[in-house]
Amino acid sequence: MKKYRIIPFLLAFLLLVQCEDFLDIRPEASLPGVGTDYTKSENIFLSVSAAYAKLRSWGAHVFPYIGAFEIASDNADKGSTPEDNPTMLELDQFTFDAGNSLLNDLWNSYYDIVSGANYSIHQMPLFVEALLAAEDREYALQCQGEGKTIRAYAYFNLTRLFGRVPLVDTTFTSEQLASIPQSSTEALYDFIENDLEEAIEVLPESYSSEWAGRITRYTAMAIKAKVHLYQEEWDSVASLTDRIIASGRYGLLDDFREVFSIDGENSRESLFEIQSSTLGRATGPMTYIEYAYVQGPRGNSPSNMQGWGFCTPSQDLIDFFSTRGEVIRPATTLLYRGTVTPEGDSIKVACSNPVYNGKVYTPSYYNNWNFNGYGFDHNVRILRYSDVLLMFAEALVRGATVPITCGLDADAAVNLVRERAGLVPLSGVTLQQVFDERRAELALEEDRYFDLIRTGQAAAALGSKGFTPGKHEVYPIPAAQMQLNPNLTQNNGYN
Image (cartoon, rainbow, N blue to C red; front, side):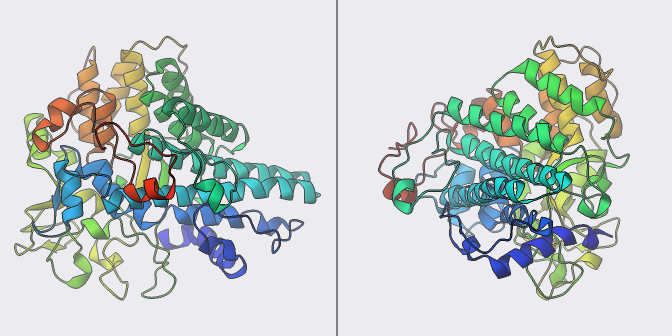
């Protein structure tokens, strides 16, 4: 079933690659003036599909992504072998500087997503002007909302990573791009919020099953809630998450393990996933993402059950689960060598690392690509309903005063998450209990590092790894970008 859900995205993207050369230009290149017939409604989604495809890039959601967002945290170690990839080791040990190539990959990849989103956003008024049917014009505006959500998401990650970055919302020449100064963090958040607010107004509440995984109104709401979370705007967080909960469209799956399975993709618990699929084939177009593959068991056999072994669970995370008496969540999150999975796959004793990320485990019967293929059908979970519940609870505990319509309070929201994990309910939930629940629930999902920073816990949690307060709250502006644009200024502590 999974291999069919993504086909509309991929067919549109592959068609666009054949007819538009602009996809080969990166980033923020001039828009093509010819080649698209704006009178044909079947062309509306093409540029949006291309923007979605850019989310699958190596830099945005594979190797650099797991390094900067998770390996730098107390949840994970570099993994693999000691000598493998010193650049990733720099992120793990806080010895990185502006020359770290993974940080430059993140910068380039997220701006490439911005470029694709900008192109799509500026295409839609041309369709609105040319199309005759009202429903087609409305659909073009919905697609523009998807483009704005994608752009907002990319800028949210850029802002968290680097603090201050150039704001590009249209097309420029290469000379113009090389002269744009950085916007302040506040200006960036204002821009992100505006994009998401405009998207919420036009996006549909849902799509039919063949379009599962597309961005909806509630996707934009959830991203916007997290943007407000990072700015400590608790009323906005509470209001948005309350609307999502009250909609009744989302819920927790009964089985925590199912959430991270192939069959559990785009479920009622999902608000945003990066789609990945081999389309059930052994060869062909590369419509997959290697997010799971680079975290797969290193040195395992057969070949379709092994990966690079990066982002391994830390002893600190293992101990955290143990002290809480956790059983259900670590059974999925922690994939130990020398064990056999419930699906019958062996994780051999010969594997390089004692434990791997179990949330990206993919049974061997899915891994049929012609080389390795481990996890190529595994979507990247970006926003889940449990995250919404915990954001809602945090906002209330922190003093949000807006009217609530969903019928939950902070205790009830947290206890929904705990109940599935087999834990006893809490009463009078504290802020630290919410933080701990976030760690246990979202471990190894690229949330922890910036959670530590935004909540002021980074110095205590990461000091032994080399975290320096006043410096490591953001990463350095990549040296390659400083050379391209002399108007960029370096972040504190990296000169």
